[in-house]
Length: 298
Image (spheres, rainbow, N blue to C red):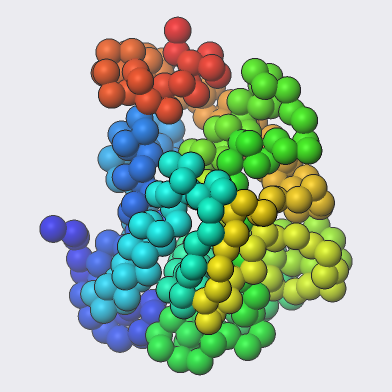
């Protein structure tokens, strides 16, 4: 049973028994475990392993159930078939659950990371976005100002298209690692009056436009609150500013990963290698493939 404590639900504002809420959906960690990862590590403390995704006492039971309904829909209709390659040349008809899911994820991650945002204007706008999204998620009307929500499916193949990163190179391996296994989030504000908050989990970016003067900024698929159709056969990431920004994030993530490896104790490194080579499930997993290619297992 999940741990709980009495507190104020971040969504409803009611005093209730708080659940240990996943910031990123539980099904993502289930996927990572099924493809080889059964331990997760925090960058700030790489020597400490934990067996589940990051959680915090955030939501009451009602809010957890509301979020879980949309997470289940997304996992079954988009995440799993996309990761398995079943959507590469197909279409998906979606309903309002997708928009709700995207907003709920962006809201949770922004709440968790907002202390990292710099700039008076940026902080104010993000607080405004959080209030609009909270009202909507709690059964209110659709967001009016911060309503532009995008989903960007991403795989190494989609990212490499037109980018021509040679296979087998360190950069190509970092692209694979980042797109398939990493989490990331921050506020993109590298150009004047063009700001967007994103959160990334394996295979998917989610973007929320905070401020936008340049309509050419490509954040992927605009998600309608009323539903629609996604044609994955015609979908591509594009080759504009946002894609090059993602490449920058990949390079920065690789540098951070290298720093974590340097800070990780020799005992923990040996455990990772031993577990990868001796456990049949891990040895034949996506994780093992990437670790071996990156030279972490021999």
